[in-house]
Image 1: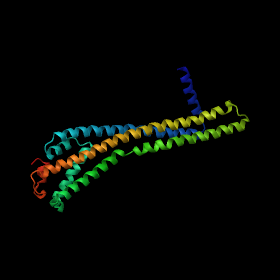
Image 2: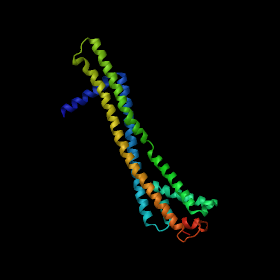
Image 3: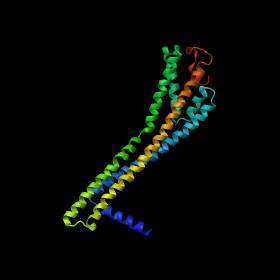
Image 4: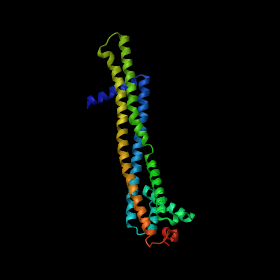
Length: 246
């Protein structure tokens, strides 16, 4: 324990005694680290919240017998991607009904129009949850090289000291080499959590996107079955009766 404390104290002294370039490199790495950890915690909270809301919405969806019941549930549980997909599908349906489109007479074209809106919404939701993940990828790729730059600069400084002192003994070069290696360690300490966080969050997001795609298919089948359950032409379906329980 005492040895560990001495090492940490010496490292801190080396940082304080390091040159301006090394200090700038360490400051840059520190800023990257703070922002990357902030992104990791924020996105983890955001994705967990979306997953929880999606599970709750799927439970409501499984219990619903009509689109009206789902529509009412979507309003009560709105802060999740599945609810957004459902609302956009309903919105597109109402646009077609109220606009008197030719799609009303073509069942396949009508369902394709709904499907395109759902796919567009899935892309929008995925893009929304991907926000800031690129920063983690950038941090993981860039910070090791920033640390390496500090290392190279420190080694150059160490060789300059050898030239000034006219000797190559360990006492002459050790401080410069140690200062250089600190920036390498700082670069790796910044990059590794960012890479792990990026891969973990991206995997969670892919699972969430897959869940959105599955739900979109289930909703399409549910909507189609309800609208054409009585083999009526879509022009005879009252949009209000579907979404307001009438």
